[in-house]
Length: 305
Image (cartoon, rainbow, N blue to C red; front, side, top):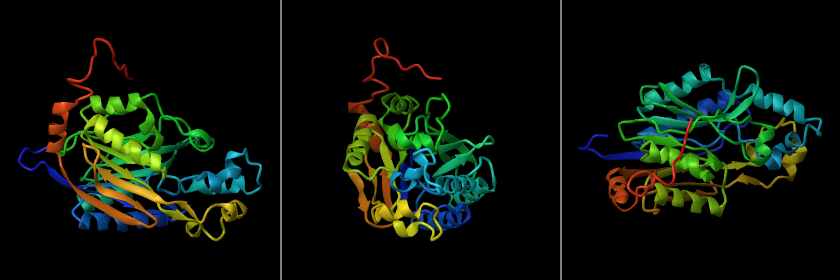
């Protein structure tokens, strides 16, 4: 981070994918990233599982129920066919979007492995388009385990950038104290938190993380309605029973003192931006540095792989 310019504009992009259509979703991603870059953003965050969809329980219930619905197998096959392999032409397109934006770009994807197992994965691209980090969700939450496999036994670590170390945890990984501490210990200053949680409690979580780590938190969610699903969706019975708004959003940007730099956005798509003064992290850690002077490694230590 340059001492002469410790400020940066960042953006969180609250949007729905073109559900179950990878290529169309990537086209939308390119438009959204260009729009955020036009607002001056040097860090751009998209939601959890943005490509090609988050497997919402209310809609994908028959899949979670062990393929009891005759449409469950076909919809899972369609879902998997539109997931992202790493590397692939899909990741090349995302990298090109980051390069054209001249920004760090975090994208939540459904990753398909060579064997066919799927993972909830965060991809972090550098401003030159290089894929700098691939992070698979350590523990899929509850019924997500019927769709995603667990991530590898690797402790999350922040990525060095010209703005200082940037870390990323996806959704309820943010409730894992040791995962958070691993990022703090690696010097994290900007914390990326793509999610599918639109609850009021999630807002308490991201504000707590900001205060605990004295970090900036960029929380990003989708805004998804039933109309975003394709007309030929295989589980239409489940879709028709689901709420009209499947995910209301709640994207926000939080300062190291827990205050909002961009208030939570609900009920629509949109791009939130804020200018970060990275010096506020330094100021905040005079009072509390949980991985530094406020730690007691002689009594409590984190062992990581």
